[in-house]
Length: 303
Image 1 (tube, rainbow, N blue to C red):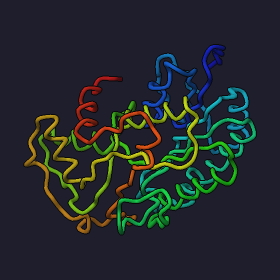
Image 2 (cartoon, one colour):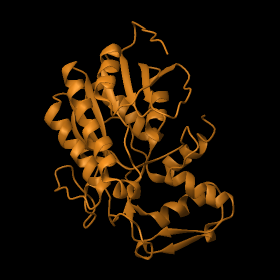
Image 3 (tube, rainbow, N blue to C red):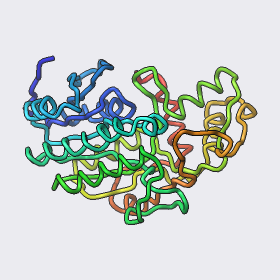
Image 4 (cartoon, helix red, strand yellow):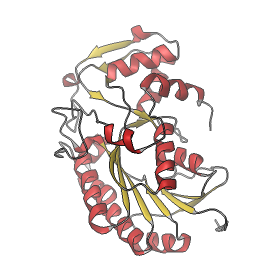
């Protein structure tokens, strides 16, 4: 696909453009930026955005692409996020979540682009919750380890960076499910499922996060921030609120402990993030869970 250089708009490159965050972010950014997004095997057509096929694990191919686009901002969303898959394929997880991030950081620094790296709450062990940005990191699975390595590489190799730790849900552009989509699908099919009562988190909608990332790009905010929802809840409570917002049957949701599931990877029990630092810095409202889910409902047919 050819490059259509629009002189009046700054350019942004979003990696992982066919993923949950990447696709939504492309749509959010396109009013203010000339958007390029990468994909590998999963092409998607996003109006007024340019998709570029690239194997990001190929350093030379990736560098050639980034030099050609020469973006002002790179938002690095591409990652291997399936926690159990990462546990079973640690080398692949390391290559994509860590080494790839190192390469992006190096290239970004070389061309003086700002790098926004999307990290995760899985870098914490989940023993206490309400984690501050400066709290000790101690991941308990391969996914968390490799994403934390990514953070370290961004700090080491890139001067102009923003690291955002988060936990998102929303509508995928492709036929795959975020947690909220999976729960909604079960409820609408009238199928029962288990909601963990002992895994606590602070989820934020991909759209709310996207607006915050857009603000950070316009204002050139740097450093490390937790960007999560202000509402602490269990996976069971999350499922119940989805049922409430969509007017579906809560009785389908069974409250269980995560200990009854034999996961391949360990799961942090309390992943809640403290967002006081972000609330002081950003002007974009961070919506509570009910507000986010109401918006989630309203955006159902965005694709």
